[in-house]
View: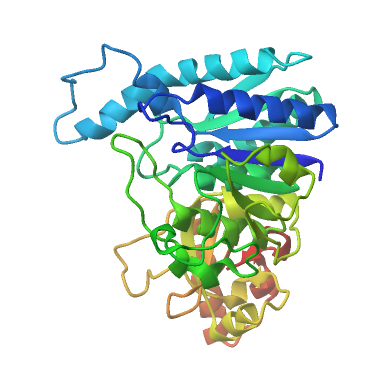
Length: 387
């Protein structure tokens, strides 16, 4: 195990006074330093900006809003994050610089759009890979000020998945304030489940809990189970553990099986391009395929999607007013004729070109003319991932 992504939750980084838990950050820094000395590479995904921003005494409002467009509570959280993010990084830098030898930390504030765009995604991956080679610890967080509801991370568990997939991590470690996944509610004496083969089978165990007043915590155990389902299908294992556990990071890196809950892989690693399509790219359109092709895709048969197998663009035939608008190189969902998603892939032609090609192919077939046009590849198998 050489490359680790460690996600640190907001509950863990918030103390009883609803302020940033600096003792926890120091403990993390000490353990990360030990990993770096042993030749491992570490990337952090850290919450805590909002908690850090609360220490600013001037953020009491009222705030200036765009009429009918802004939620004042959301705006306040954005302001807290904007103020708190440099404060959070200042604490991380101070704790890392106290190590022997001192460690450099790098800040990476990202939005969902940075992963959705292929060029930005590759650029980000290149920067991170060079940082870890230099022994610098990248610290990711969502750029809450710039993120929009239409294109943001549901929480930092999702961000941690995307970072892990992007750098081809050996393990995603999610630290929280509970020991791991329990077989029933903690108030009912729930016991730790040490290993889960199928994350989908334990969704019912994601017990809701009361949040600390004022703490921004989008996730919870259900979010972590969903993250485990995604990342393990990409060939990367995940472990959930308590950050309060003594030397939790170094013990897990040493493959101590008695810590937390392990979600082992249940899928082979994909190519880097397929990982981006599966975990990073934003879906911008839909195409519907024939019953024959849909049956093959359901059975996970290897196949490129050819023009003759494409019936329509999404549900345009049922709803002509709703036009698909994707362009060449975009990632689209592939549906059967009932609208069930079978997978997604990167198209070789835009919506207008594909729409015209489908109509032309139908006209030729109606006239009894067989041409090689139907063999034209719409989505190559190398750029397609199954649902």
